[in-house]
Length: 463
Ligand code: PHE
Image (cartoon, rainbow, N blue to C red):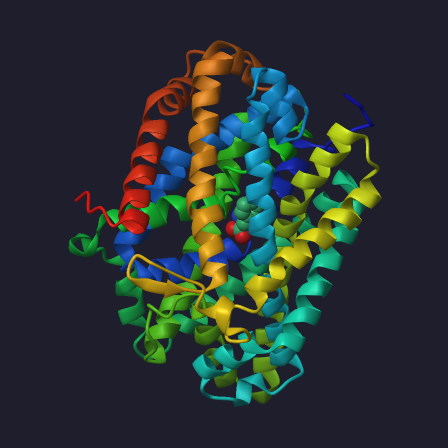
């Protein structure tokens, strides 16, 4: 196998910034609130937090450890440690990541368009933000230009390499995002009917919970933590031997779920204040937020609103970087291609793969009403989300648990973790990670996946 000089992070903080940058993105601010809204509010939040900390955090540890041990892209990592055909599991992850980036980039383009329209356009004077969103996402020209711009920006940074490109931005921009979200939450909580939003979000009603709620919460947890497709294996492959994997994973998980939690606390009071529906779906954040920016008046509104959407773009950018880095690492590791041509080829391909998702919101009828299952007609982007994100990512998580526990073995796994965490063995976190990866995570994830696939695609009602 051809080997080029591989990059590495300059410090533990560099890894944490990059991994948290990958984790925090549209998944937290765009997807998490709308999934919570569609799945009944607080009960979903409780199940989501369970999935994040109990099921997914050990899988995060597993991905970092596998990547750091093998020092390879996901395909190479599985192959190097597992031998035989295990590389295929890594390859599936790489394909899943490519497909996720194809639609993610389109949503990032919406966020960029909203930044421009809020700051310099007339969005805030439109009043009916739901129909504005509908018109906006059907507008081919804007979407084409902005998602192309987004892919170019992602490509430029990834071409710059691991350290220079990826670490730097995240460290600066994430704290700024946190501050603006906190400020907006305080503002939102003072508005009329905010309490109703808070109780929708924080007072659980478990009578609404169904099998599908568990599936949505689980797949959202995988998506938000960037797990199940190899982004974290890849970043793990740049992680230093002397750093502590377990505490890094805990910090990334906490940061990611804090930002998701806060964006729910931001969105739902605004939804109830404006008498909107929490079940709005993928438009939720784009429909709920402009209303308060409008309230802030013609000077402050565009300023704060524009800053918010711009920071959302940066959060999305640190995630698209991690999504593009995976196939780029694969091609540079395995085929001795240089970084720059790899980036140009792969980014162009993914941009093209995103076109149907872009046209699936009213521009082209065939993509807009693409497939009917589970009693509803879905657009092309939703179909991609279902197959690659909702099913593909938990599948990847299931496979890595089995791989670590039964192929690599918990002993060698613990040996790797002991670098940088010399007292791992015998501690509570060792027992927790071992039990979770060997039994609970694969069992829970496998069961939920099987039930969902039976229910949604074959109409077999298990419960
Ligand atoms: N975690 C990212 C987000 O929440 C999305 C992502 C998924 C990134 C999978 C990488 C891999 O926005």
